[in-house]
Amino acid sequence: MDIKRLSLLHRLTQILDRNHFGTIDYELAKFFLDNYRSISKMNIYEIAEQNFVSRASIRRFASHIGYENFAKMKQHFQDFDEGAEVYRKVHGTADFRIKLYRYLSLMMEELNIRMNSSEVSWLIQEIDQAQEVAFIASSHIAGIFQTFQQELVIFGKRVTLLSNEEDICASLDYFGPETMIIVFSISGLLAETLAPAIRCFTGKKILFTLKRAPEFNYNFKKIYHLRSQENTEIPDVFYYSYAVHYVLDVILSEFLKLKTERNDFNDL
Image 1 (cartoon, rainbow, N blue to C red):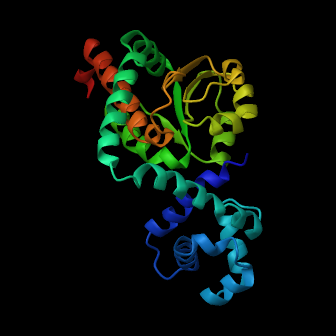
Image 2: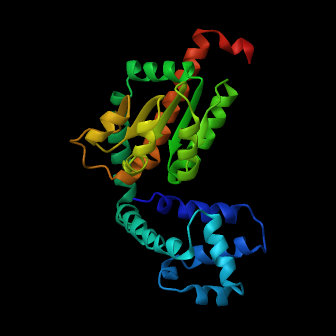
Image 3: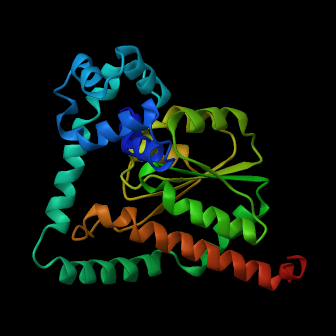
């Protein structure tokens, strides 16, 4: 499956957030976000007419955000509706706050067991000793990692964040065996999509995921499953935010403990 569908919304909002008011890219990004429910039913002539731009401008826009052509980009807009339905089912319930409290309590209790001291200590030692460390995540959760990335830099560890297919594949080709990659693929889709590139990568490979798949055992040195197979009550959508935050906070905390034990803060 093409992971570009996971980053379409991210790329459109990125263009909007740059605030390049009045540019063709800015206006088209606004239009696509405002009309995402109907884009899959519109043709390039209609969109060009409504935005007072040429069809060539729309094709260039599609190319700028990573698509071969406008038709390929248009196919991915229907995925927004699929995502919206998930949020409606989970967040649209009358007793949402009560359920959220229960879900988070259960999730934190299990994660606290799964992220035990020995497991985390091993991971921290590997991160500390690796010459290069790259965190790989879909654009859906990449924003969470940006703060974590900056926090690690403050305390002396530079890490790379990769969140789109082109950058990930190019980096895996470039990185050598001294590099460690840590993949966060909550649903497992990202890990499956990148399997050929990850298989050829010669450095250490770590995976955090909900999915259990035999092929992951061949591609990764270590797999951290974020929940047990028996745990079916908590909707997956909560793991994309709360579980990722929890894991990154634990990693940061253990990294700071390691720095403290070695008196590394004297160099800061």
